[in-house]
Image (cartoon, rainbow, N blue to C red; front, side):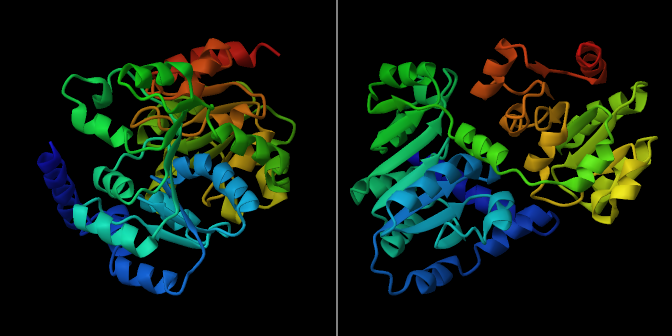
Length: 380
């Protein structure tokens, strides 16, 4: 299995290099790792302080890591902090994050890269957010006796760790000094394979969204846009979400303002929305409070404001549920509004909890969104 894993990692890297010829995100992934070790060695040269390494797959996992990292920085000020990302969507947004001393991409998980990375960084502690399981890095950290922690983790019975043939994957879990999980079911699954250095600690994104709610930005433009009408905030949408949301918004006959923030704000996506929706649409970047008040749809063509925009909403739709999984539904939920999302939510404990409470709704198409939305819209 180790040979198959290593071959798979190698092929993955080669495929990304081929994809980089056409795909901008793959191009960022490749370019960000060019001369990476040389840049890393130069950056860390001369550091004599103990170093804590925090690793996140992408931006969503960073939101889970952020409250842990910032609390660690506050209580362990003598440590330096290295933050790494696997995905460009995390690195490109947070490469200038001021609570970390250094921010880098993580080199591909090969045995040679893992040895060189750990030898260069010399971490005193390592922290992984949610579900980052890299065999060679974890094995090297264990060989070097580096205390290694996984937090905000969540496990399901159908994962390889819990299969009869999953010994290779179980060994990765045994590299962690301690695992902090989101729910009791995860702790029981781990106990069933002999892993008991586990604590049920919940999801650290709750700490993050609570802090956002307390320190939210005032956005007069969004307030003027709402203009005392019901407001639906649609965040982090992908094409599958737009196929549901755009027909719903087009056909909804009652007063409703819509803030629409695509996950990727390419010109192609923005134009598609503008050409598809028969509404008065205004891009955020060119809006004024006067022009916003006259628009039906405020099209968000920047990043970093969505979490604060939710405070003005009465309803929220969060994207991702028609691909790999929903984005952060806690960001709108913390402001006390009902949340809608697509059918692929089963890996997310917060979705199950909010559905059970009756404040979240999974939808499969525009008709089911309209049915769920209209019953709430009419119920003050």
